[in-house]
Amino acid sequence: MEKDETKALRKYVEVSFSNSNTDKMKLIEEIAEVISNWLDNESDAQAIAKGIKEREVLSTTGFGNGFAIPHGKVAGLESPILAIFKLENEVEWDSLDDEAITQLFVILVPVDEAQDTHLTLLSTLSYHLMDEEVQRKINEITENEAMKRFIEMIFKKGR
Image (cartoon, rainbow, N blue to C red):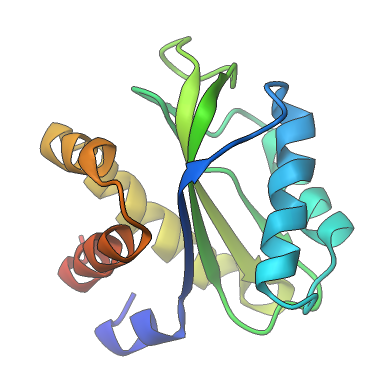
């Protein structure tokens, strides 16, 4: 992603999300509602959940070490979104390491930007999440604005 394009990426953060669902598919519906509200209903919760679930059934987005990067194409979305949730309750996610997740990095892209934007965002985020120091820092962050600043720094670095 070009440095100019990081400004187009809208970021939403909840570092203390009290999820009421610990089932993966129900949690997707729960976070879709939250994201839809953040977007002032630009795209409805059903479209958001559908986009994430369609991708999730292909293969797990559970990255490992408590992180998952669910992502999907969403109709009606104006620009790409990264929504970060630090969950209070663990969720079984069929992660690559078979561990439950507590960190969700949700990538949503407009349907017409799906290929390039989606892959660039996913690639950049995945690259940095492989770094144990980045994982440690994310786990330590307790404020929404601090998380936004940290994520912005990651995307400015690129790959």
